[in-house]
Image (cartoon, rainbow, N blue to C red; front, side, top):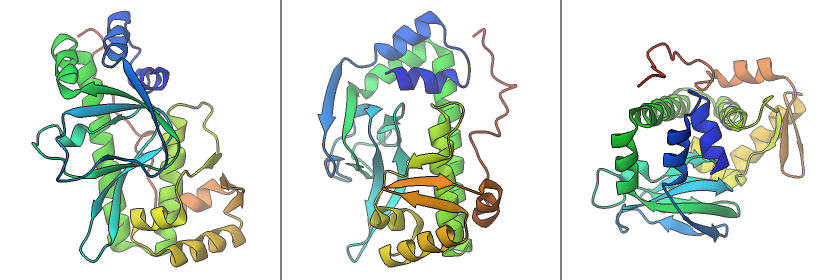
Length: 243
């Protein structure tokens, strides 16, 4: 729950009553192993929401022919399942990709927090808007850029997400995805992803070691990925801390 408070606190310092409301969303904490399907699209009722305490997860949609598209990545501090709230059936699947610990709560608790504390709703909306912008950027990247640009943009997206909770932002981190999963996120095959990693490594833009990625030349990687950090370029002038 610490990471959720830290993430929301990046938008505006949280008051004591707001921290209590967020902590009170859930009391049940469970652990999950990699490969666990938390939600199976079109099958599960979407009443259950999750707060990521540890680990990584992703949202995906199964495509005709057995292929899969990964649409969103989840990190500690994220709330999972909110995109399903308006519907009676889940719109996508949620899968655990590394050992994870999650807090569980019904979606009604979120509505109660929004009603009693409007600033929580405003912060939530801000992050939802950012996540929509990030998804839009990735869709444009997949449709209009070369494979190496897509991979560079994804590496930078994950680095930006890491920086929300870790300051100063580090340029050495685990991607937390297999090469097959990376391919599903950027519309490439596992073989293509492997080749492009080697290309970036050989160019001296990144370095890899035991599952870790180091960004060696960030300006060059940003240029290759045509990347905009949506978490850095925020206009919070409309946001009132007195509501």
